[in-house]
Image 1 (cartoon, rainbow, N blue to C red):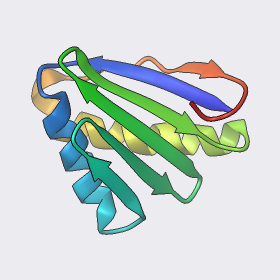
Image 2: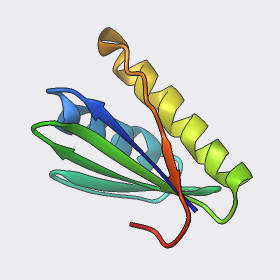
Image 3: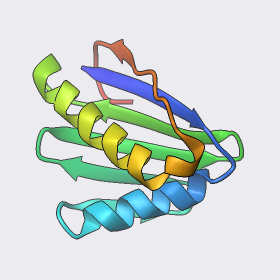
Length: 98
């Protein structure tokens, strides 16, 4: 089960790096310019940054785990990007990870 959100911002790469660095102290993270993956205990979240903004894709085995991943990622992005007041709208899909 997947959910996707997009945050339109000119600071996408900065937020991607900040999220990866923050979570890298707690869980496995991979990060390179323009993309990252955070391995949360309830499910991974992949991130993609480009000139348009920051895309997030959360994946989990069930809705409860997916909701936890979404809550953690959303709350942290809101904290790090508070000046821009991100309001993420997550779109849910069934199936394999994107």
